[in-house]
Amino acid sequence: MKPAPFDYFRPKDIAEAASALQEADGGAKLIAGGQSLGPMLNLRLVQPSLLVDIAGVDELSDFSEDDENLRIGACVTASDIEDQRIATHAMPLLAKVAGGIAYRAIRNRGTIGGSLCHADPAADWVNLLPALGASYSVGDARGTRTILAEAFMTAAFETVLKPYEILRAVVIPKLSNDARCGYAKISWKTGKFAVAIGIVISDPSRGTFRALIGATHGKPIILADAHEVFGSRTGSGPLKIDETRVMQIMEKRGVAEGPAQRLHLVALRRAATEAFAL
Image (cartoon, rainbow, N blue to C red; front, side, top):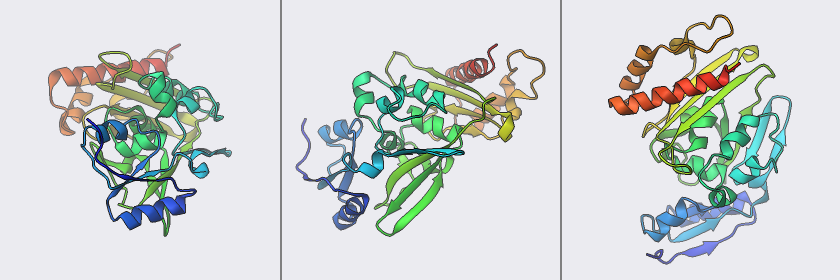
């Protein structure tokens, strides 16, 4: 199939893009990499009257770093991060995760902001960034606001973005030198979306011990204090996971099927093993 007819506009800055969205009164869609929106257009799952192409807006491809944070523009691609074309050396986990997203052709075009706004529960950035305690800068023609990553996605394919708002940048707190990270993804085939994601982030210097259960068909399950399932680690061996407690948490959040629970448990255990491997 081919898309329904639409007009096309390429703004020079965020203000023009926001104005175009407002003037279209709900009939416009933003496009950057188009790796999710393109197929949806071809299948006529969405039929906008206007496409606003923000890929050429320089501000949305910016990268900056200070002592505390990395700031990544929403139109930075997965391959930009994978290949270190933006200097994310302070957070090597970002390049690792970026390199495992889909296939190279998709990574060359797919943007970090597009993935977050599409809000597929199985997408890598949708799960990793809340685990890292990130926040998002969003705004419209009137101003900007900051949204915590864990509050951005409300349900599968739904976010808190208002109709005329644009995701501008992702702000990620840096980890300390002694931080430990584990990221495990289970897919039925390389390059496909995950059926289970487990993440463990331990940063004692910042008082952070966080875990995440992702690819749950809904919002990721964030454990702000991972001691709840891992207890207090003693010695130098791997973490011991309280499987019963993990199952209870998943059951409460709607992951009730036994096979799905076991997959998520395996992913979480692998992430913990990676984080604390000797």
